[in-house]
Amino acid sequence: MTGGAGFDLVVRAARAVTPDGMIACEVGVRGGRIAAVEALGSGLSAATVVELADDETLLPGVVDAHVHVNEPGRTDWEGFRTATLAAAAGGVTTIVDMPLNCIPSTVTAEALEFKQLVATGQTFVDVGFWGGAVPGNRTHLRALQEAGVFGFKCFLLDSGVPEFPPLTTELLEDYLTTIGAFDGLMIVHAEDAETIAHAPQPHGSRYADFLGSRPREAENLAIAAVIERARRTGARVHILHLSSSDALPMLRAAKRDGIDITAETCPHYLALVAQDVPNGGTAYKCCPPIREASNRDLLWDALADGTIDYIASDHSPSTVELKDLAGGDFGTAWGGIASVQLQLAVVWTEARRRGIALEQVSQWLSAAPASRIGLRHKGKIALGYDADLVVFAADEEFTVDARKLHHKNPVTAYDGKNVTGGVHATFVRGVRVDFEHPRGRLLQHGTD
Image 1 (cartoon, rainbow, N blue to C red):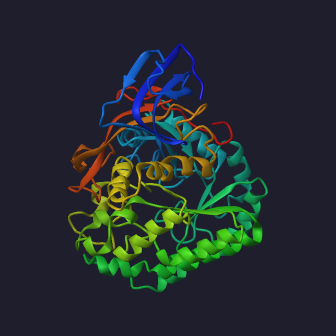
Image 2 (spheres, rainbow, N blue to C red):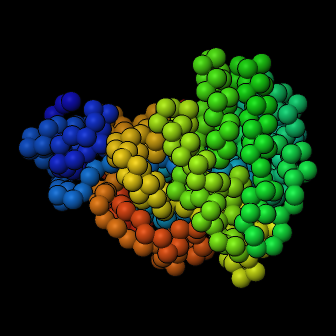
Image 3 (cartoon, rainbow, N blue to C red):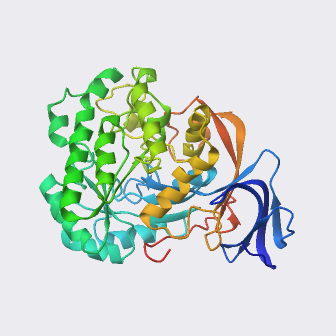
């Protein structure tokens, strides 16, 4: 810790989550970075001083590494302005945008440049980008890496949009060999296409039918295939939105064997359960699906023991019409849950019920994802880090109203649910988000 004077901002908190645990401190910010962390009462001075109330805790901003913004091309589903407004309102200070559901998909350096151009001047939080790995773009991967993407997303089955086709497992190995040569990271939607093709096809309003159409075996087989190909190639891999607890033993074994593999799960798998999904409740449809309560408990255990490395929202919104709320048909409704504004509160609500400390929740939502994807100055209240800070009221309760959320379409599986944890203020690089002036920065891997 070090002192100093002439700070741009000082935040004083009786409780702050830092790498040293929950402490009372004063945080001094200069030039957008944390320049001092001193004991509360040190008297750091600045042009702007923020003193937290007794019921408030200072957190590092959430780093959401899995967000579908969809702009350009499907901006009626979501856009950079609305997605980042929602993020800021929920204590998220950095998002990393997925390469599909936008048109064109982010599968070439030129497509990335176009997306960055569209995003410029629209973002209220900092935004990074994933590239895509699809058949035919293997020769573009190095150029995408050099242009600043944080890694490459692939599907092992139909993605749901025709412009982003899946890789076969044979192609996956070829692509892992390619990105392994420049230490890239492959992030994988791991469900086995053949298993799902032979499962009962979903139709109608019964959630049980939809759940049966996306069996655990599909995840298990696909994850096993990823592990084996990561073992052969030595490439770095990451499993997206882990839903099946059956896959946890093989992930543990792969980590013990030294394979460079990580995994994330999502708020909806940690807070919601299949038994509570109403028939016709297509707001709950996502892929992989929300599973049973016993499965949820095992995912929490896997977070605790490090098998699952972090939590990401998989914010995957669509229009109201595509979610088919009126018809309630799980066979035709879009699969995705809008949650970027709610993930901190949703995860904290369930974690608190389980006796898990806020410091641990912050690790899963901020420090761990930032570390894995290479955001070297994000996710911690520590010297030299970006002053991405959240004033969080851990005891504050509220009822989710989808109509009052900032994301573009008023649909979420959490509508009407009671959650705990209010975001009172969000600072991005030392500047408080005012929800009027977009000051977010576009991030590039290797420089931020």
